[in-house]
Amino acid sequence: MDKLQGNFEEDIKINRFKLDEDCEIQPVLYNYWSDKLTEAKGNRDKLKNEVSLTYAQTEIETRKNPPGGKVTEGLIRAAVDTNPKIVELEEKLRVSQKEVYTYEAAVEALGHRKSMLDNLVKLYGSNYFSKPEGRKDSNSDNYSQDMRGRLNKDKQNEAQ
Image 1: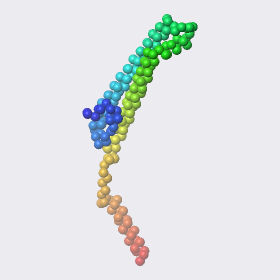
Image 2 (image 1 turned 120 degrees about the horizontal axis):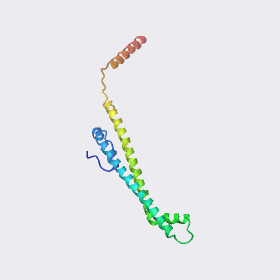
Image 3 (image 1 turned 180 degrees about the vertical axis):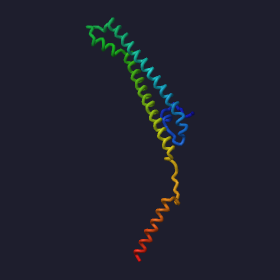
Image 4 (image 1 turned 45 degrees about the vertical axis):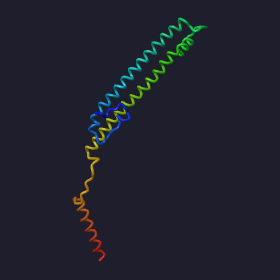
């Protein structure tokens, strides 16, 4: 089971000459990339919670010590939204969400890989890739030759 590379482009490839190995490794690959997806979702959810908590703490602090002038909801919202810590956390959240999307696509592609493995196994089972056997002495060939011979004799008899 040395096929597991942790490199998606390599892991997704199918070798139609080693279908037994590819079918055997498929659940391992699916599990590996599903675990990566689960981990990425956990990280994303943790960041979401951290953003919410930091946002709430910053809003409370901003209300206690407003940045001068008349205190309005718009001013508080702007002060919280531009807080460098919140901006940084939201960027990390965007990166984390992108990672989740990437792993979701990988897991979906592995589902397609499984489907293609199933199709290839069916094709091999039906001898799709077998070499044709061209036997000249089959009954249909003999019948065709016999009919051609009769037609040629009929043409020769008519010509005479």
